[in-house]
Image (cartoon, rainbow, N blue to C red; front, side, top):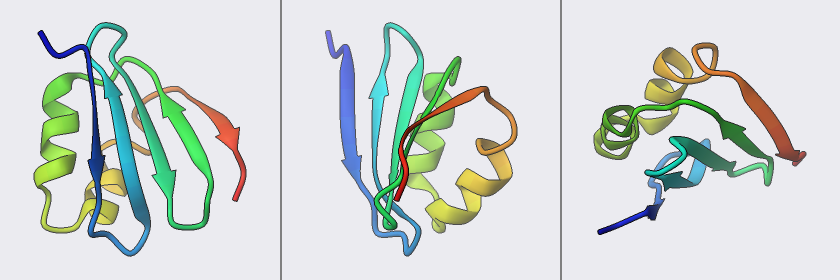
Length: 75
């Protein structure tokens, strides 16, 4: 059983994503170096982010203002 996963990005804004399937926490590392942690993100949203043609656009439209977050590291 996979409990968490990491995906590299080809986006100009999103560098990589980390997802924990047990806690539904998505961590997003941006090209700027900033890292944010989003809570309560369904695995389907993570899958869609990984598959999006534009991960930056998908992040902005579907994740950024839809889930509570914590700033872990400012870029």
